[in-house]
Amino acid sequence: MIGVFHPGSSVVHRTPALVKLGLLAVAVTATALVGSLPALGIVAAVAIGLFALARIPVRIAWRQVSPILWVLAFAVPVQWIFAGWEAAATMGARLVLAVALAAVYTLTTTVSATLDAMQVLLRPFARWVDPDRVGLALALAIRCVPLLADLVREVLDARKARGAEGSLTALAVPVIVRTLRTADHLGEALMARGVDD
Image (cartoon, rainbow, N blue to C red; front, side):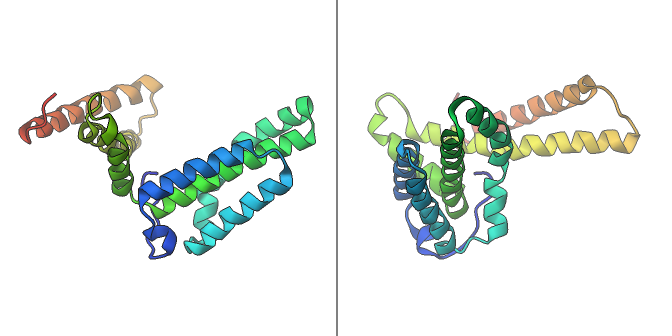
């Protein structure tokens, strides 16, 4: 979901995030319950149609779906051995379709729209959960993933520049120290803006 939004003006892009989340939940549940390959073929046609309607290039769609193929490379043969080819094909198709449907959502919905939708969903539970606080926590978590990746990349670049090819500890210690320092700065910034602990 991080950084994979593909801008566009299609009807899929313009559909509210809350509606898309609901449709995604229904579609993935239906895909999980479908037991026949022909029915899964219909779901596949719908997924392909949504990619086309959203004008998502094939290369970008493939980049979102292809990582699941590594899982299937191991899972499908095992399923085939223990349950037969039809069960293996059904399981593989279900996984690919679930990932494809989720990819349609992430490629056509901004992170901010998703966070707003989550806050709306949590409003009825405001007595027990603060929707704004959860939204802030999710936003920070989403922002910190690429930030942590940048920290690791910087440490690796620094080691390479020094010609050091140390152990895992030599990588982990500077990353942890820099991560904790960044977390302190982030906490201070939040407190300065009136966000309590």
